[in-house]
Image (cartoon, rainbow, N blue to C red; front, side):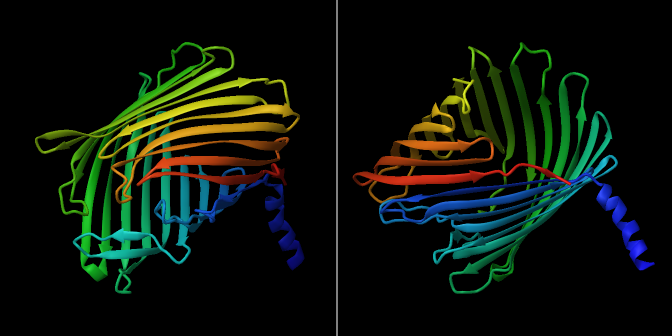
Length: 401
């Protein structure tokens, strides 16, 4: 009898259509100055008729040197994301667990003159609810909780936690635009330094998504005005902010050429003062040719310019030229201008990186590649070194059962 009951319970499970996807991405590299550079990214995606589960593990290793100091970012991160669709309601619990690895931990400057601390790791569970009331009206809510493992310079645990709750509604109007009204509250506490801070934010957003555009053109834009109520880590009132973003994508300007351009701007309203918080312009041009081969050849031109309290500039070119079947020649070059804190190096650092490489693609299942790079940078003097980067990407495909 009990075997019959077990069999009946297994019938609906066996009848469900389930799809499993997985992937792996490994990169490694280094030189005499930075011998520990690399990452491992492994993940799986399980999908049913009205649910899905995403599990991803990422391990990143990065070091620092006496020539170029880096913000250490060696960590192991686990992401678990579950989505369940129950009629018009989507339930989305997720968990992020990050552990900082290595002997040298990232250092943090604490608020209220609390000194210096080292970060050991973070556990962040979350829950999101999304309800599509009708085709044009959607309600959403999200809660997040951070438990941060932060150790004070005297060896004491800070007891640092963050809590955030927010929600709102989005209305898709008949005029190719959507209106969103949302709000959230955020609280930070650190028991050891007697820090307890709460701030609130209220957002009104308008997004445009016109449908009557020329062929092969995509345009979107949004404007958000945020009203803040509270103080930041420096015990200063948080300014209200107007954020705007415009994206223009044009496919087929010329045969096999596409262009994607994004402009972003943030303006702060601090009492009677109006100031630009950040402005960014990014553009990317992709040219595809020899598309009848196993691996199409590609040339990518990209650039980004940002201006805020600091300024950054970047321009680069990447090319993949197919030689035979899955075998391709790679070449890249990049120029950057970024701030630097190296003593005697001046406020900005100019960096140039270029080099050739090789790649082989095994259909759409796997890719192996390697690049030899030379980097030149101006610090207290001109520095010049070589390094090697390589990687393996593996995607076995979908399995249905």
